[in-house]
Length: 123
Image (cartoon, rainbow, N blue to C red; front, side, top):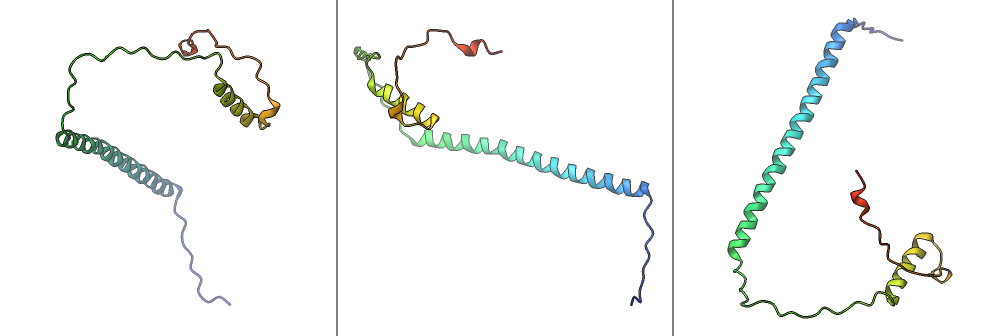
């Protein structure tokens, strides 16, 4: 059994749209204000990092200078034809990507591709 019944008048469409517009503007304004605050904080962190780097440079001693040119030493020649370790690594990578045992794969030949840089073609 109901004793109290309260009737409220529905707001006109124009007033509801006005409230919805204000809610939208307040939400977007808040979001942009927070984004601007975050960008200012990130910009300020760059100054803090530079200041710390300057302090470290002042505290660390200067490296000693070596007099004279570096001695010329011939670099060891790399034998790329019989590099069995490279073949084993490539075989293991292919076996792992194909989900097959490495024993079932056979490497018949390895040759270097002599074409140019493909990144120059990508435009």
